[in-house]
Image (cartoon, rainbow, N blue to C red; front, side, top):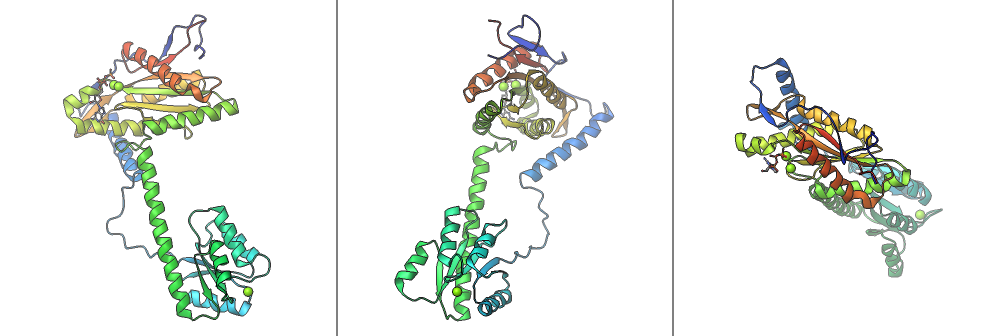
Length: 374
Ligand code: GH3
Ligand code: MG
Ligand code: MG
Ligand code: MG
């Protein structure tokens, strides 16, 4: 059960924060210089949001040259190795060489390792197929495209090489252009693979983020809450959640329209995110509700953090469609000294109860949930 925030007979909900009237009010344009200063900041906030979501690309920037593809060549015959390297450089590949299988494997494990590898079959130490097997077992991304070089021609051997995870093979001796077309085929596969990874990442972002604000969506922030509860529990750390809700937000929509409302939501997201610590997380929990997860925060510091967010919201006006709006929010706080993953729903429920109290006390407030005395 959550403990109270000080006091011997804690009420069901403790309250801290300013008693300023909450809601949304328009400030006259010429009212004070702070408004102008803040407008600049808001514009910067919007710009940084656009940049973070992929905006801000120079329209006339020259097409960047694609970087040279790094290719690993592993071959124990020094003459053949030099020859292969020279050909690759001539074809504008960035050649990385290894004189045996062990060296090849080391290079393939390193950061930014080559994505295309030409491996001789017979080498001292690990042979080509063994290097292949290890690469495939490691299941590293991005994919490494492997061409085996073999002097063998028996089909049984080739099957073994392909089974080890090679993508293609060349039988020695071979003509340069044979190698060239095989490298091109490899490059095509790698390009496709890159497209696939990019699409998968875009889908992952889409599935976990709210399109309007760029914050985590409801499902994602609840996942984060459960994970953080488990981690905090293991490490014996407290955890707090804040549930923030914009005050009288319906009036923004009713008075200035839905687009203005959307702009306020975006700016609110930027302000909340900036007011939080780097390891806190914030998500859009509902229409104008934001759920924040604060690992390592006990009651007092959670309330302090909530108060900073309330101030960040109310401290200056927001700009929307030539209007400057005074927007405030109310925040409910709930926390656990010794969290367990099963606390997620209860914590959000408690934060919601505290939020309700903050609203009833006049809005633009922070209220913390405290357990009933037993
Ligand atoms: P309270 O202080 O009690 O929270 O009052 P409120 O007006 O903020 O709360 P209420 O629940 O009555 O209204 C919330 C409004 O938020 C209604 C809904 O149209 C608006 N809203 C929800 N999602 C969006 C959105 O994505 N964009 C815009 N512009 N408005 C939204
Ligand atoms: Mg060899
Ligand atoms: Mg609401
Ligand atoms: Mg509201």
